[in-house]
Amino acid sequence: MKRIDLRSFTIGIFLGIAILSIFLTGALADRLFNFGFIDRFLSREEKGLRVGVSVDQKVVNEESVVIEVAEKVSPSVVTVSIKTPQREVIQFSPFFGFRRGVEDGVEQDIGSGFIVSENGLVVTNKHVVSNTRAKYKVITKDDKEYEVKEISRDPSNDIAILKIDPKDHPEFKLKPVELGNSSDLKVGQFVIAIGTALGEFRHTVTTGVVSGLGRGIVAGSIYEGYVERLDNVIQTDAAINPGNSGGPLLNSTGQVIGINVAVAQGAQNIGFAIPVNVFKDSLSKFNETGKFPAKPFLGVRYQIIDKKTALANQVPQGAYVIEVVEGSPAEEAGILADDIIVQIDGQKLDSDKSLSDIVSSKKPGDRVKILVWRNEEERELTAVLGEAE
Image 1 (cartoon, helix red, strand yellow):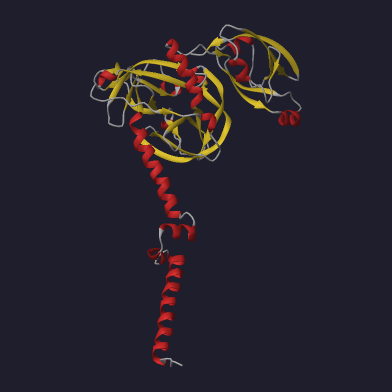
Image 2 (cartoon, helix red, strand yellow; image 1 turned 90 degrees about the vertical axis):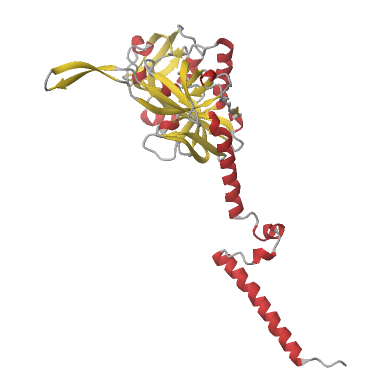
């Protein structure tokens, strides 16, 4: 029988304990302090088995997506700038007293937009370019400035198409965006917004998710002569500020899936975007005729009273009128604030049919019968729908 060398055996035991201690210490440090000692001895596949997809790898992937989308789409995103017209002012001088003078218009960035064709079509929100007396221009990421030659407005969808002349900078080729499909959106889907935040910080990139679908918001302003409701808009927590209006909401491949339109007043991280499919339909009609189709206009700002609220308050279900636009078809028909619009041409307003759905199905000039609830009784009024400007 061969004799065991006690000295060699003892050294072997100590070496084994030392190596085991090193690995155990490295594993502990890796967990507690993220030293990654063991990672140096493991292949990428083994690391994947040990910890799944690492947090670092996930962050790097998300960063890469945002960087790629920003680099791809930013050349197609523009800043919309306004120059208000000159105005007369009364000026005072200690030598000449009060005199009439002229004050130059103010030029400032007010919104965002994006290029949809190489021949110079740019999309933005209608409310961004609502001042019909002002002059507008768009500025690209490379600071190329283009005067806006024509504006076509679609106020019922709060969309406008600006026409610029590519020949203003023949050395620069306009790059259109790629339009996606908003009908495929899912709640929780990753999205990216690009725009001129607060009308000051051009090409600001923010990220978030689709927070909700099918939302309804009030669009327009009574001071612009148009107030209606935008239904079926996208809600997102991607940071959207007033200057982002008209800019693109993008998916992770850089396709436009929405047009940023509004931010919830008094709330944080709640923004809204018009689904791109709505715009694609409008753009198709615009390309056919050179203008948006005429949209019917009633002229009320309202809030939906659902069945639960109606039962609780012992009132009918319908559209509660918050405000009536001055000089609108609604005012001429005798509709008042605090009325509840119950029916239009016999169609009840409920969860299946909203006021905007019924009005949108009509044409400018149509005469409609409107049943309202006022002072606990029903009244039938007649309105002739106008044309949204």
